[in-house]
Length: 364
Ligand SMILES: *Cc1c(COP(=O)(O)O)cnc(C)c1O
Image 1 (tube, rainbow, N blue to C red):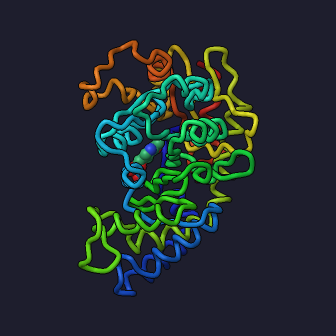
Image 2 (image 1 turned 90 degrees about the vertical axis):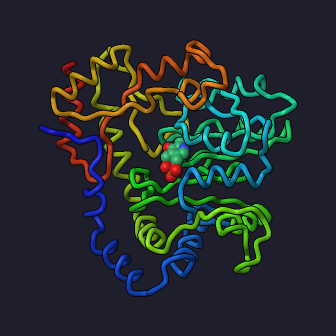
Image 3 (image 1 turned 120 degrees about the vertical axis):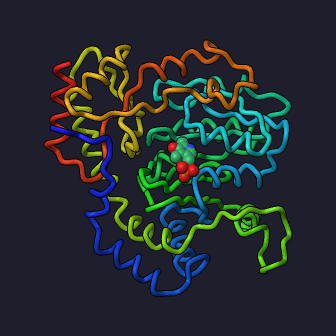
């Protein structure tokens, strides 16, 4: 058997006619940027999320960059961020001139909230929380810390569409929730796309201006903006996907449950699910073992493709050399980078394929 890590065509095929209909509707409308599709997607997304405002943007990274820009992150400002995250989270800070202050992960691979307060200094402006792999971090505690220290709380929800904690969706706990709709994300577009949600009207207004050259009225540029608009095609396609997100999440959870119940191998650590475990949306199914490279090769030899999220932690990335971190600066994160392995888990994966992956792993 040959098991790819992801086959995007399978999730497309589930609702192919609806996607094709949406595409033709946009093509034939003659209106491609900032029109009805974007507006209605924003309405539907904010209704879905339970927040007051939504602004469609060009990507998840743009959502994060603009979020940090509106809260006023400038040169020299410190932002607390998990050491174990995708580099885009950190790029959002440094793109604004800010300094990332890394905090090691807990046993759920998310930021260890017990180490956040000791990272706060007089220069700290905000906390950039990440809900990694599809499970919310301890955002309740981060809310308390941010209120106590008067910090902004921004959520990177690129991997956690529809993830829940205490009955609330990811992105609705902080001042701003940032989403990516990159094709492989749980709510994926068919190209680049992103959005922010917020309950703060001022923030929403400003991001709306920023995404369109800093203007509300054409040629009246009030602030120093960018071009980061969610185009009509992606918005129309996302509306279709959003309608089916619940069923897509359900399918992901079913695959994950099979892995959780089926994988029995003393060499392998399964992902830990927090007590509000119903809320995990399994953007990735990440196992860990100190024989990671061996296991990955063995699985590849048996036709099972896996990936590593992520092999190089941001503090050791080439682009952040000047931050001065060395191997050993964040040992827990570095250990994870050597031990984690993501198994295939995607919409349209058959249970036969899932069973095959399980049997390979159990034979290892
Ligand atoms: C994908 C991702 C991003 C970036 O989103 P893009 O839409 O690809 O720019 C940011 N943070 C995390 C955690 C991600 O997984």
